[in-house]
Length: 428
Image (cartoon, rainbow, N blue to C red; front, side, top):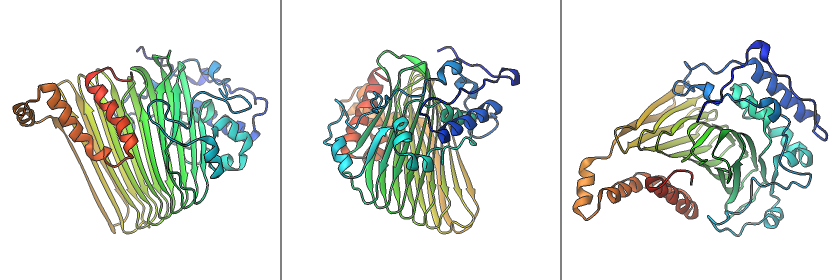
């Protein structure tokens, strides 16, 4: 689609709106400061590792003056249409709001939670996705008008997944989800980003903050699959405490140009982060992923397995940073990025990065990229497969190790998406 870029000079800075009725003063000040930061900040430097492969000007959009007054799609009763606790027709679950409430779980519009649960929101909102990391994260803080707040109390074990649907339905869509998980709890969350029924282009800016206490076990699945002309930025920041474990999966399957920054801070001794990635790009789609595993506590473990499948003239870039602080002793960190190119027009870039400030660690990293081995195609054809069937079987084998690590119902869901991308148009 045509780039909707506009760079603001010093004379073109836009003032922020007045405080709205019933808007908490602390939230307004948070938004105002973030807006000022975004207006005073230049576009990110393309020489940095975060932006070396994607021009940040792509994500500059017009229409911010009118958009900043769209505070929320939720009414005073918290009714909205961008999230649900069910998998609708795509996945069955017995979880319902009443059963969640019985366990002390809170699931509601973020705009409603800032009024009804101010103590929780004030403590955690923008505690990880601070304005400082970048202009676009600051814009998200200033302008979000859609999103969910999910609170899981201590000692809550949720057997069924919680599904959040984030609908990209405007020329500019700004989403903010805040997830707070207590001690010794267990939960699976599916965070799904899709286009609305009448939206085939636009610009999305999405941010997710996840904070977990000690001893919890979290599975977080992020699916990004808007229609083909959507340009999107997605920022995920998580912090987990002592002996907590998070298994996150990032699936990228739609959009035109997508930039994702996903980071986990291992803030407690014995914290464990497993991060998987599964990207399928076709036509002229572009995905740019940056992951960051930050070991700030001793005896923490991180493991990244990021797999990319490219066809047609699609291209991808992956940079993965492992940072281990000086006082974080006896940590282990592993990072792997594999890229499968289904034809000559596809292109992949991969750069693993290490910042190791102590010598009492164990770290490994690696990257591979290349086409399907012709001998594998030949072998499968000798067993009765045609070329398309052989390619599908090889791709399924390429992603199997990742899908085997997630709950079965979600595995079926993602397997269907991969199959559709091999044979149909993405995002449909």
